[in-house]
Amino acid sequence: MSLSLYSAAEFRKRAIAQTQTITADSWRDTGDAKLNPATIPHVEEMKLKDAAVLVAAIDEGDDARLIFTQRTATLRKHSGQIAFPGGAVDDEDHDVEAAAAREAEEEIGLDRRLVEPVGRLPDYMALSGFRITPVLAVVRPGFSLSLNPTEVADVFEVPLSFLMDPANHEMGSGVWLGSERHYYRMPYEGRNIWGITAGIIRVIYERLYA
Picture 1: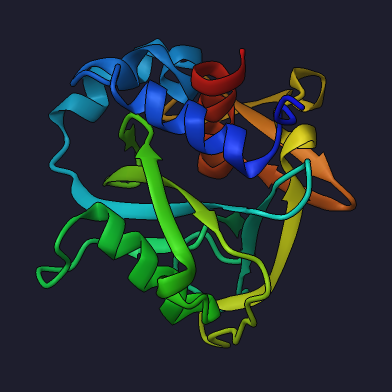
Picture 2: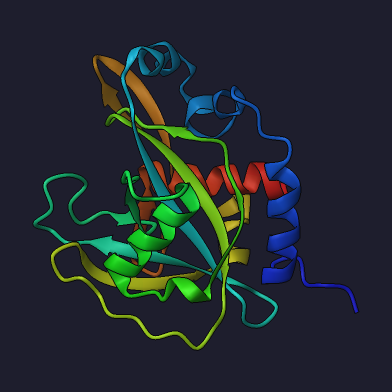
């Protein structure tokens, strides 16, 4: 029997295959950069800090689920927003995979021993000053979580089939430095996934499932 299109096994296979095609310029042609090409010269002039996020697909059933966090309202940046677990790459991190797994363990208590990195996406150049590497991973089920209350208000899961359906990729816009900027948003059960997180989801769709 063939694998379900949205199973963790199929996600793993597609993640590995597309990682091999990433070039230094791949970020220009996907996600938010593709939506807002006028921002590319500005980003290229910035000195960006390295960061990593963990795009964790739970290996359970024919429809894997991705793990999201809702940031606390007291954080200085992006308070209250929905995000993937992650943060800055520290000097002691061996690579971005190690950084993403460490941050997920610190933020939500996800045991890094259950996390299997299976690929990366092109770097996401954030106007907030970060070069974010999305680390694609498969997580064994049966884990327990313990949230860091200073950073994470809630954690929830969204089926991959929902996220990879372009009918659920809405468009929004706002003004940034005097110019209109477009972004993706993906409302799900009363939660508004948008901005960088939605942009990363769109890149997953474009590179793995489109």
